[in-house]
Image (tube, rainbow, N blue to C red):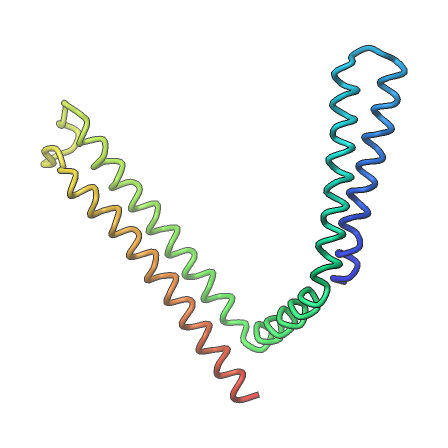
Length: 166
């Protein structure tokens, strides 16, 4: 399946290039808009260049692509043997999204309060300092890193357990 994809990408780019070239010739014969002809001709050249670059890249990296396919197959086998990893990743993603929404709500309130002259809407908040805003930014980065590392450590543990007990 991956080999089909590797061949399909340059073929699709070449087909799109030929289609753009055909449209350019059609627009040139009607001569309504010279810019359309030039645009389609340039698009055809760009697509053909991309097809050549992608083909050259795939030929030069064919051994690494083969190795990457084997690693991907191994990762798929691990995921198939431990489907709870997927649920854990989705759970951590939901926690991260919920935290981000909550953090954005608080941060926008603080940021707005720091530039607002009317603070009656902010309750007891009386103009947060730049240090407080900096603290909230660092808190977000810290919490995001903790959530990402919890996921990495858990997945690493499952992969290690799978590797040593297969």
